[in-house]
Amino acid sequence: MSGEERNTIAIPNQIRDAMIVPNTRVPLPTSQPGPFSVPQQNWIFGQQWKKFDTTGRNVVELKLGGVAADYLAAIKLAAQNARAKEVILAVGHGGAGDFRGVSQTVFDSIPNATHGLTDHPFAITREVLDLPTVAEKVNGQWIARKIKDPKTGLITTIAQATVDKRAALFEMLASSGQTLRAGGVARFVLLACNIGRDVPPPGQPGFLALLASILGVDVVAYRGLVAIGEVTFTNPGVPANTKEQIWIATDETDTSRGRPPSDDPDHASFHDVPLTARVTANAPSVPAPPP
Image (cartoon, rainbow, N blue to C red; front, side, top):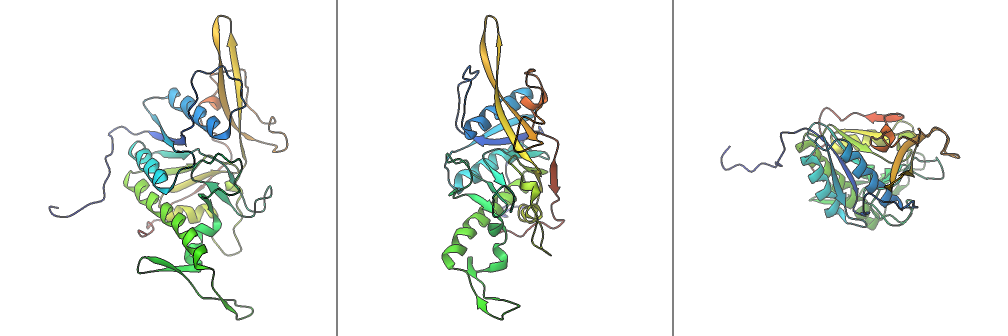
């Protein structure tokens, strides 16, 4: 195909998973008992996850408080290291609409130093995924649609500034989907709380189904609280070692319920993402068109 440009990325022969974590590094091994911030916890767990299988796993760091270009660079690097396997996004919080006080289903795409999801500029909400229902792309720009209320007959539009804000995030997702597909990634895993509890509006697709249609790969999320906590292991004559443990809490008012054994540093909860309470949305047979 001489003279024809192709959108390709370098792909290693080796097939492996990749985990995207915040770049808040902590000296390891650490004897610090905590408390660590959520970004630090995710970074530490990522190192444990990688160390368990250094040939089959790779960690990619994403700038704390970064911008869209940082996210897309991390996705590209992860895709280059995860052909036909998983890219796991472990950078922050998540939530499901009308559950635990969250108004709509949402997840962090870029790590943020502020706890929770309030005022996180790169939080991906249902409103972002629903952009094509309130706006259309004309000559490369998203323009607010005129929407007629079937009950009242009133015609409304949303503010163009709101469209622009959502469009920037929608385009970021769509571009990342192209990269994931080009890298042969099979699944995009959201290691954040409760996104799998999403209940879509009547007659509309669910949050994960919408996200899978935009990315063009399978999307996995958790129907439960993704709990994380420190455990410090001590042995005579050996420096103390603090590790992060991840599990799905069976009771969100008491996260110790359902917690795996914490006295065994080799337990899977110290080096594997949870395999319980997972919800999967399959990619559409026809990938979404480019943005």
